[in-house]
Image 1 (tube, rainbow, N blue to C red):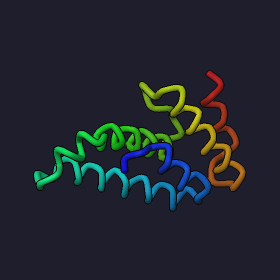
Image 2: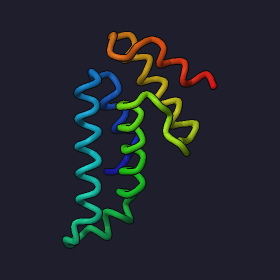
Image 3: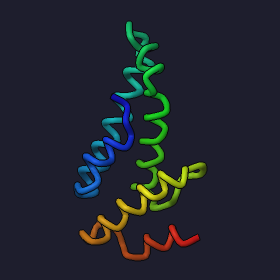
Image 4: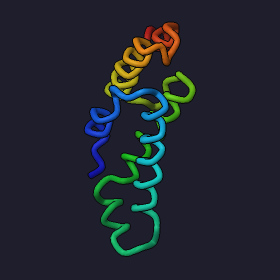
Length: 103
């Protein structure tokens, strides 16, 4: 249910606007499920909702700012680069964005 990689696979070919909307929805849903105080919220936390939400927030930050979030794993940075290349090819990111991955 809280599989960051599966979500990325579903959204990586979308336009920036659609991708950003879905990422925000995923953040909202995972946090609601984990912290609503309703029955089952502890189970959602145990299933990884907080970690998933954190990674989705980092992706949202990257999509909005084209800055690699502090503490991003090398695997997540590779995901941001892949998404950036796709958005550059669609003209939705400036080509210079790729430079954030060279340092």
